[in-house]
Picture 1 (cartoon, rainbow, N blue to C red):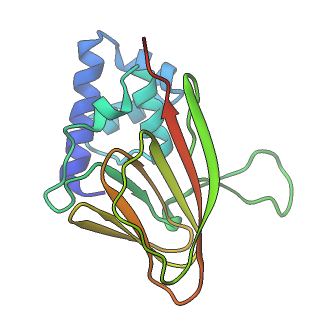
Picture 2 (picture 1 turned 90 degrees about the vertical axis):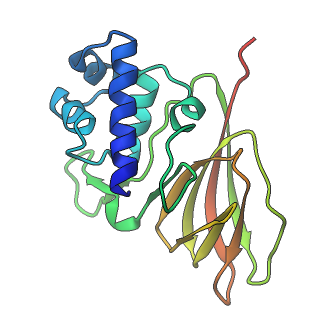
Picture 3 (picture 1 turned 180 degrees about the vertical axis):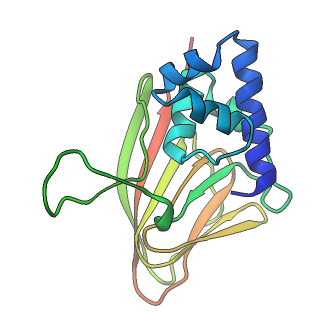
Length: 193
């Protein structure tokens, strides 16, 4: 994550928290993280994991589209969160040999519909740019996939993951010579009447 995006996210969290008159401690409790971590994130001293960032946004009761709407990078002007395989959080649930957990993504699923699919891309697969009314989470099971967002391109390797607002024009391309496959999760927010 680039430094300018980290600062924008940090500032946005702090501003939203203050607008809602929520203390650092209250936000920490709501997001199920430590007060120190919230403070470090708000002061741009640490990069929040994808999981923590989503939990904080939900704890602030802010629509994700609204939160990321104005966050832009000089080099990558679309709000796309990429998490490389090496950045996944390793943890233990219980003391047992041979169990290796890696937390790659956690999402609270209230007032939304979730669609979970496996997408296979042939080497010559192609389609025009599309938009969806959902947040899209992609996890590359095998192969190398390039995602195009308007004029920007992001390459994901096996084990990398990405979360983005599907309303941004996008399309994937298989960069390999064999079929690439991805776990795809669509989060459709239910419309408020």
